[in-house]
Amino acid sequence: MVRYAIMRLVQFIETSKLDGFRTAIHDWFYINRTAIVVEKDLGALSSIKNNLANLNVELKEISEDIFYSLRTDYALKNRYLKAKQYLGKGYRAFAIIRANKIIGDIWYAIITPSQTHPDLKWLGIICNNNDIYMFDMYIHPKERGKFLAVSLQYEALQKLREKGFQKAYGFFWLDNVPASWTHRTLKFKEIKKVEMLRFLTFRRKNREIPLL
Image 1 (cartoon, helix red, strand yellow):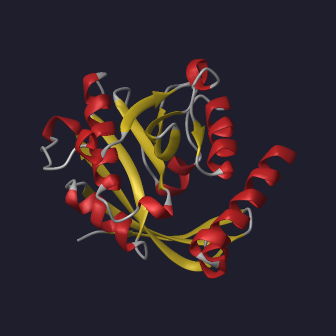
Image 2: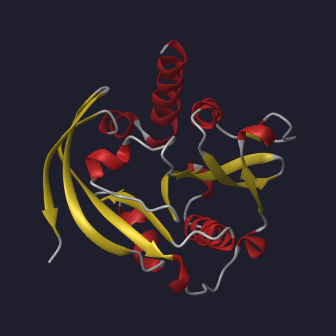
């Protein structure tokens, strides 16, 4: 609990410095924020024009057994602390590296009888054995606007398809325009809307809205 609180405090401070105080507050307090739940059939993954090799970054998968042997560091301390939290829960990530700094990552959970993810309950997602849940994609603010988000998520989906997974689930906030654009560029299928309330660590689903 103490480590989680420290990680969140560091995240708030760094987000305030890079994205502004208002953005940092918005992550912690909202009354009726809308999440769009999405899924992607990995067998129908279409190619994109730009890939990470053309963007001068290296893609690396991160798991707990290799994390501490990496000769790289996160560009932001809160992402490093968050990575330690996630890895301790059995989650994995795909990270993009430039000049020995991790400048972006996207996390995924393999859903099994012994491992799940708390988002699945409030999002109303039911994963099968060959499905995964993707979450918490982040690109350093100085690196945004360079097509990195689309390329990172696309190549992560490709790697997961090669591992034998069939479908990926996730969500994006409706008021997060870049995330909305990324998911729609990659042709994720939008399943439903979920309206949420949050006050610090308390989070509640207000209602679920099927998409027509």
